[in-house]
Length: 156
Image (tube, rainbow, N blue to C red; front, side, top):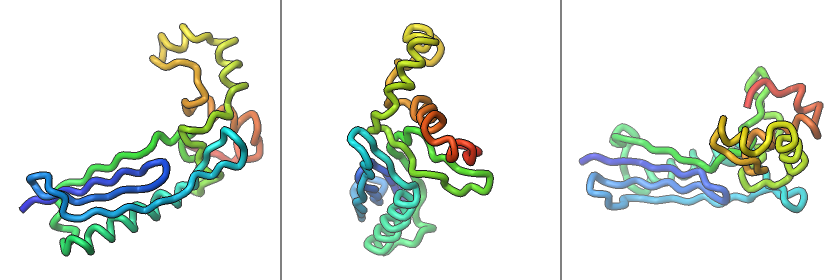
């Protein structure tokens, strides 16, 4: 028998399930977590919350199914849009919580993009509109408002 595992890292929790080749669910697990909202319109999460939930839900599914990891023939992972991405330093240490998709703080950065680039030009190049939803505005916000963190960031 073939088994597949799927994991979805969502905004408020991670879900994992195992199905057989017919699509019947053999086991499932869900781990809930919180979104940090230090101010109205802000939404952040530490990546460690996500990976911990992934490990826990996978372990739970394997235990509940009585399957060994080697019996899983395929794996699919999906996740929430990370927003700013995960800001890490040169040693791959996370600098700050990830500003996730639901965060709306980068309104000044959107105005800046609109004034200097414009909605039409941005859309022609990227296919996107100007909105605080997108990661580039969140990265700009970190640069403009957290210069000490910005200096430490090696990659997102």
